[in-house]
Image (cartoon, rainbow, N blue to C red; front, side):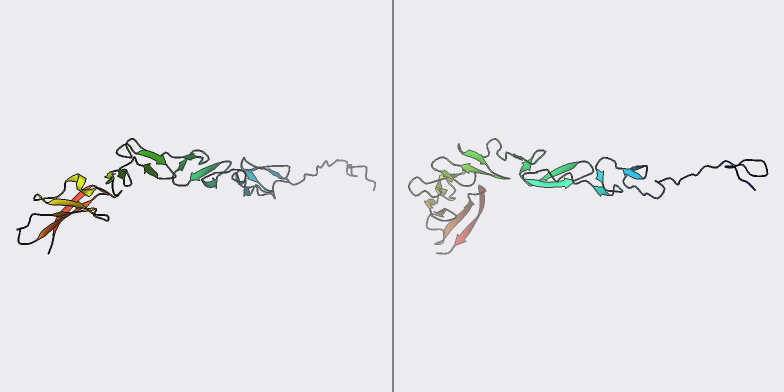
Length: 192
C-alpha cells in the first residue's frame, strides 16, 4: 500500500486542519479587561498580567493639607478641617463681617480666627471694655448694680462687685455678670 499525501488506496482524500486552542481560553482577565492573543488588555486605571491591580493614582499627588483617596483612574483629596480646594491648598477664611467688636481686626488662622483689639478693649471678640488704669475689664462700665448699688472693679472674675445701700437687714447684694457672653445672672445674697 502506498500513501500519497492524503490520498489513500480506496480512492478518496481526507483534508484536515489543525485547530489550535484559543490562547484566551485559559486567561482570566479581571476588572473589565479584554484578552487578545492570550494577553489581557487592561481597562483604564488597572495594571498587572491579569489587570488585577488598581493603579495608585495618589502616588504622585500631594494633597497638601489633606489625605489622598485613590479611586479607579481618579483620586480625591479629603481636606483637613479648615482647608478646601482640589489639593486642599486653600485655608478657609474664618473671619466674617463684624467678627471682632469695637474696631477689632480679625486675623484668620487655620479653622479659627482671633481678634487684634484696639487699646482699652479685650476679650476674645474685643467685647470687653478695659479700665485704662489697670488694664483689667471695666465691669462697672455696664452699670449693672441694682438697687442703686455702688460698683467697684475687681482684678479677677467677675471683674466687679456691687454694694447695695445699707439698711437692707445688713446684707450686701452681689450681682454676677458674665463678660465673655455678655449675659446677666441672678443676684446672689452674700452675708456680711
